[in-house]
Image 1 (cartoon, rainbow, N blue to C red):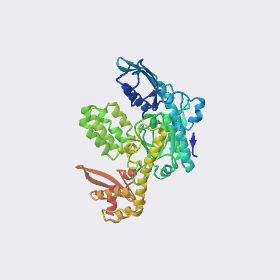
Image 2 (cartoon, rainbow, N blue to C red):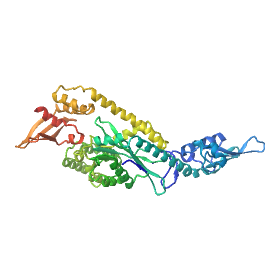
Image 3 (cartoon, one colour):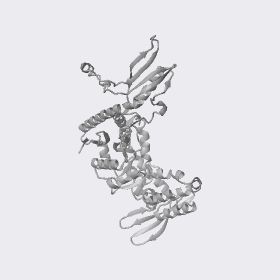
Image 4 (cartoon, rainbow, N blue to C red):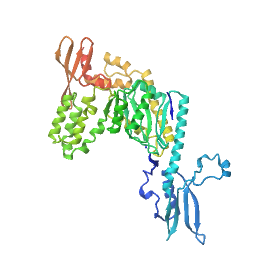
Length: 501
């Protein structure tokens, strides 16, 4: 089903039932003993709550003296079906419709304690949960259709699997689609957010606006994290968004995702999250080697501006550590073009080298969302959180429209940029301008077409040198640090040249 131009109790794609948050000792089973019927009720009621159904008392068998209960049954509140003569009378009681569910437990008294005699709790999981999920999908579909009726730019698509069970959905509202037209150069994609009762993966695609704020570009629910599922989502993303595929996409290291990106976004630069890779060094390397050489690995990764310099420093530290044949290090070196800054800085990424922005965004949305949410609950709560996020963007727009940033340095260049940049971006620019005052320029070469400067600065008790090339005819400057290409802010090295003139 379409529109426009995986957690608590859950049913898996193959129909099996499992309750991730219910431990073995909390699951009904033959032979469990209790000291009272109240404890039995509380036990089964908790299980039922987590499994997504309600319970009620079905029958009791009393002893001869009528003073004690010897046998008791608790059943699903949807057991039995209404008789024909009850249908009209109960028609408006929508919340307790019966579906003849067979889930129940039987408890009998044995030597002073209550003991499970029979439990058919596994019957319920698929029977109730699948019905709940199907009903939930209907609600979501109706909601999306209503949103599309309000605004034709609302885009969604819902699909089922071969057994006609809900499999995946994608949606993007008008605000997100419009935002992609402005800020769609870089997309962060992450699938670690799993917050709904059906164990569906929530997969948002995020971007960054002109205030440096995280924005939601599109969302999806996926029942499987396979190459085929990711391709489906990315193809829907391209249908929904103006301007084609993004220039850069940042993700964790995942084989299925990588294959899907190469197929769906063939011209997009796929950047791997550097934080997730560097955090694995302590796990992948021998402890002694990590303790002694981690600092040198860091310097090779972060403190090099060009490819040859990185390769040389990496090979030196790997050789010193005796890790030249280390499989994981070798594989990471082979992938260096996807994550090492010296290799990836020339691709614009709004200053991002990891998917941590997505994780921070998850932290924000988790304030509003609970693990037991149904799909409809999730979407309603998510939309509420999204409106709060967008309100912050409107506030930032208002500030930029009616207030001029205060300049720390009273320089014409600084005052000019204060009127052009948003407040957040201007603050980044001004920091570069301040740091440019400590840079030292040295003429390296000059000919009729260009001038080359070495620009040095002291950093962490070391002298770092960048190379700035100024092309005379085009009045264009570029720097080996690639900060402008990567972040979109002129670097301190170029600003040092501009300040001299």
